[in-house]
Amino acid sequence: MPRKKETPIKTSVKSGNFRATKKGAGMTKKGVAAYRKANPGSKLKTAVTGTVKKGSAAAKRRKSFCARSAGQMKKFPKAAANPNSRLRQARKRWKC
Image 1 (tube, helix red, strand yellow):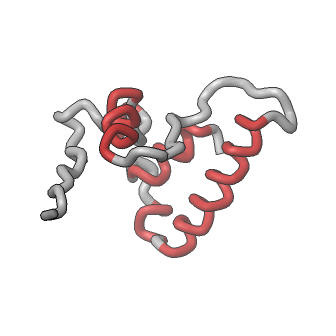
Image 2: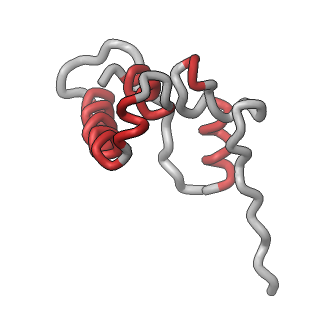
């Protein structure tokens, strides 16, 4: 049986799947839904942006994202230096 060709989700801001950099970068609810539809079994979630209880699952997700993105800041010094980069805006949205 031939393999079914996967259609990748659109990565443009126009598609509505991603936020514009000025709006905090990252994926929208629509984008996460599209990704999860294309990748059954995925556990992708939107950003943790509100206030969270210390030690909660959301707090742990935020801590994990902040740690990973701190590594990206080291790997991409150009993006780290630019306050309008997607990396910096996403970190700001996540409250890192």
